[in-house]
Length: 166
Image (tube, rainbow, N blue to C red; front, top):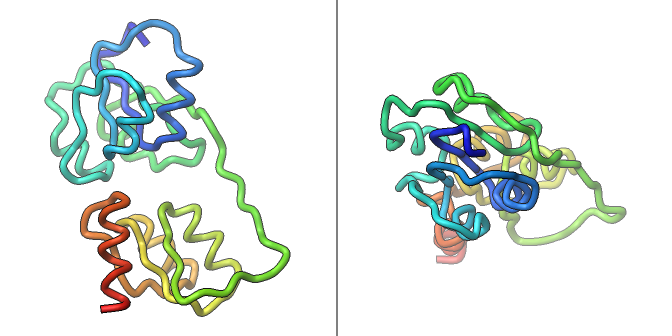
């Protein structure tokens, strides 16, 4: 990581995996969201106010220099395209289907892959989404999103879920 001006992680899983596998020390680290920064376990130089790739792009100093984006194999390419970043896939999300369809009053969707997997079950359970990308993926896959977190983190999800019972 020592050859990069910025290392960017966008998920807790990506942060933990990069930390576990990497050699060298990054110059600066940017993490999308507090949980991702905490999962990194070291110094984080930038956690954007809006926990999205767009939020990070808005706050990342320019020119950014040489950037490494480490994340899920199917991660959105926005950061790679906007920054000319190198991309290293660290993990793959695998869709798992339960033997019995779950029941519930609401479902919380914390990623686009979770939204697609939930929608594939064909259930009419109202969904609460962590943010705009997850909402878009859920709706495109046929899930019924009834609330979206204002802040794209656990606190935002809880607040959005609370609006369903208010």
